Length: 310
Length: 128
Image (cartoon, rainbow over all chains, first blue to last red; front, side):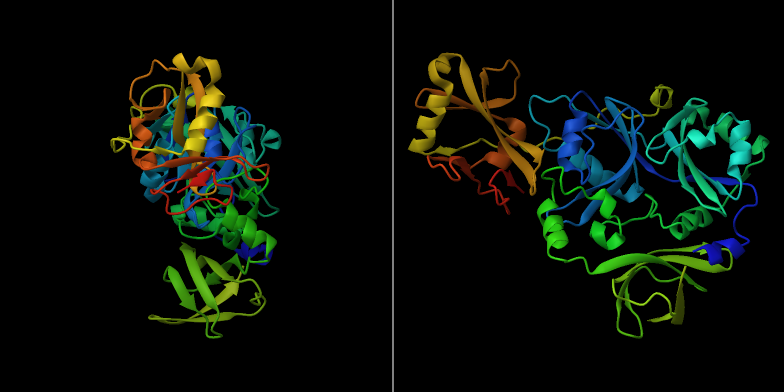
C-alpha cells in the first residue's frame, strides 16, 4: 500500500474534508439495544455511551442485508448506512418487536451529516480546533463542538478522521474547518482513500455478499449467540469454507461493477470503482489463493483492463 | 446529546402488520404442560405466544405465562380453561401453529410446528 499512497499527489498536503452521503436511522427506547442485538452479527449488549462500531444484518443464508456504522448514545443508537439500504434496515428494525418491548425507529436522513477529514496532516488543524487527536479512538466517539469525532486510520503518510455533525451545526462546523485551513475534497477520492487504507466505507453497497468474503471477519461474532445467518457463518468458519477475500486494486480506467473473470479464469466481483487522480481504485472480491503480486488482466466490454494490487 | 437534539428526525416509523384471525392447534400433551405451568393461577394468568426478531432464521418464538396484560391488540384462544393470547402483530406469523410438548430428557419441552416458516433453526426456537 505505502508505495502507492506515498507517491500519490492525490493526498491533500494538509487535509481535506468531504461529506459522505448517508442514510441515518435512529433506534431508541429501553429495549432498543436488546432488539438490535438479536439481529446484528456483532454483540452490542455491553456497548457503552459513544461506542463506535460497525455491524451487519444478514439474511438466513448469511448474506449481508445491511451494513451500518453505530454511534451509541445510550438508549438511542444512531445507525449510518448506504441510502439504498434504508428501507431494508428500517423494515428489519420495525418487525419482530415483541408486544412488551419499547422500541421506536425513526429516519434521520439529512438530520446528521457524516464528514471525512483526510490528508497528510489533519492533526495540525484539528489540534487548533481543540481536538486532542491523540486521545481519539477508532472504537469510540468523542464529543467536540456539539458534534462527534473519531479516528478511522492513522498511517505514516496520511490519516483519516470522521465527524458526525447535526444539520443545525453543519454550516458553522464546515465554515470553521475551512477558516482553519481545511479544503473541500472530492467524494470519490475520499472513499477511494479509505479503500486504499483497507476500509470498506459504509456508503458502498455490499448487500448480497458474505461478510467473510469482504475480509470483515471482525464484524462476525460467532460467540454472541444466534442471529440471522449465524448457522451459515459458523459452518463456513468451521469447515474452512471461506474461499474468497477482498483486496484493493488500481486500474487506469473504471471497472464495471459486478462479476467478471480474469484472463486466468478467476472469478472476480467488483464492489466499487472510484476515481483517484489519474487512477481508479477498485475493491475486488477474489479467490483467496489468487496471486496478488503480479498484474491481473480482466476482459471488459471496453477492452482489457490491467489490475495492480495496491 | 446535542447531536440529535432539535428537529430533523421523523416521527417513529410504524409498521402496519397484517392481521389475520389466528387459529392454533394445541396437542393434549401441550395442553397438559401449559396447565401445569400456569398451576393455580389459571383464573388470572394467561399464556402469551409471540414471535420476536432474532435467532438463526429471523424470528424467535417466545412463550410467557403472565397476569392478563392490560394492553390491547391481543387475540384470545381458550383451550380447556387455559387462555392463550397472540398479539395481532404476530398473527400472520403464528396462524396455523401447532404447539406440542415432548416429555423427554433429551430435546424435551414445547415444540412448534409452524406452517408459515420456510425454514427453522436446528434448535427449533427460530424460524423464518
